[in-house]
Image 1 (tube, rainbow, N blue to C red):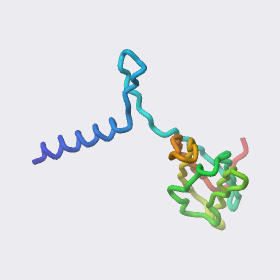
Image 2 (cartoon, rainbow, N blue to C red; image 1 turned 90 degrees about the horizontal axis):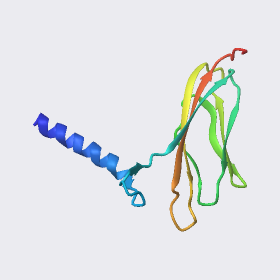
Image 3 (cartoon, one colour; image 1 turned 135 degrees about the horizontal axis):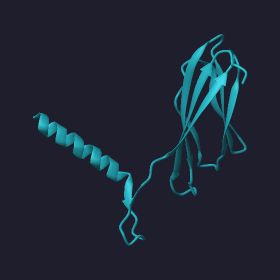
Length: 134
């Protein structure tokens, strides 16, 4: 039974990996290309009660940014869209000292009739306390 479960898990993982890959037919040597979303990870140091904004860029009507995992210790943690430009705003909870994290996805590449094809992750890792001078 353990052997069956091990093989089943291995097959499932392989199928999941291959579903995100496609064969590049233009190449004569049959290269397999895998597409995984790009990822931006940014470490942010803040003073206690200091607000922070991160510009996610410009998006068309069908495109945008979504918070996937909300921060845990905040007064403000939200995206704001004005004239197609999306900005994420964060302010830690009053007098909070410690760490916090927010995870967002951005979606671009839609022509209005098709879904977005350019998906990327943005992870902001906050360290809240008194910043040291460098």
